[in-house]
Image (cartoon, rainbow, N blue to C red; front, side):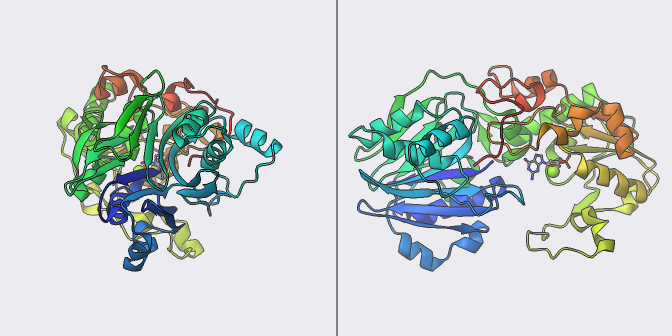
Length: 454
Ligand code: 5GP
Ligand code: MG
């Protein structure tokens, strides 16, 4: 997960970065940060919390500058690195540098151990710190050559924005696994961001996606300089379309909402159900459920209400309430459900926790039959490219067949979208990263290697 943004050549750069991070809050809620450069100095503000909690007017006065880079961090509760935040700032031989990273380096521990062996000290658990060390240790005279040196030593999935006091470097790995787009700001200057929904909020004009293996250099020149650093082998992450990205974002020309509608329609062909009503699991299942209902020709209803105010600050409920924890967030409209046969559609099944509880609340609300439909294939392998999936043992589809899972959940049936159906819905014109579904670790790493993304 995670979101990154870079703003170059704009008055109020850090304010624009702030709006962009706000638009991409869904990609990470653990911590956030912005670092700004004014040609002479880099200033950084980062902390745990949401974008609106961490930044204030006073912060923007401190930050200043016309180049700003920012980051929203996603990490699971209980992770030992939950205090970590980005961008990472450092002083080194050539001056000051700041780095924000979305993705996951598969050779994090090899590189880190080698650096530690050579005397490096680390302050965080983030693989991004490797990048800063590798740049600082390179013997090249120019920052750009140090960055290129560093890029030969890291492997895996990454989108990077690197800021010096007067320049900004943007890099997307050769597989283009995580999304990254380039836009032009109306008031002058440029923006790069993980998702195009950030452009819409700040009124930027979309130019193009950053190419896989490309580096963009923002400096004195009026336009960014592009260099193709690596031979591209494009494999955008299918899970960005399935779950991560906001429905209004466009990845490589495909609108995310439309892709989800198409997945739902295809699911209706592959796993139909004889039902009275189709309901989504809000919010992530809404678009796919709409497509599923349309495909079946059955009414679609928002039959489950979601409480949007359950945040991280919710006080641990008492034992009686905890048993009904899902009800704090999701509540069925009994009036719609009672006596009906229901298809309930979610975007994905990971551990099975959500679905199990949803089947229960629908049955308790009087549903005659509950047919669970998942608008993505069975997740049988942990992703190593920037999605924080649990260990393979925790993935319910790695251990059980759909029939077994249906019976564990108490559902009358369970159906998934096939891998072929997914790829058809997304378009055959490109390859995808499908590692969670097919276990093809084409960019390195394995099901056993350590996960966790930055
Ligand atoms: P489960 O309850 O099966 O463990 O997870 C499935 C639910 O989690 C789905 O509703 C899906 O929208 C959501 N989900 C899928 N991937 C992720 C993720 O990486 N992070 C979070 N927070 N939720 C996810
Ligand atoms: Mg969900």
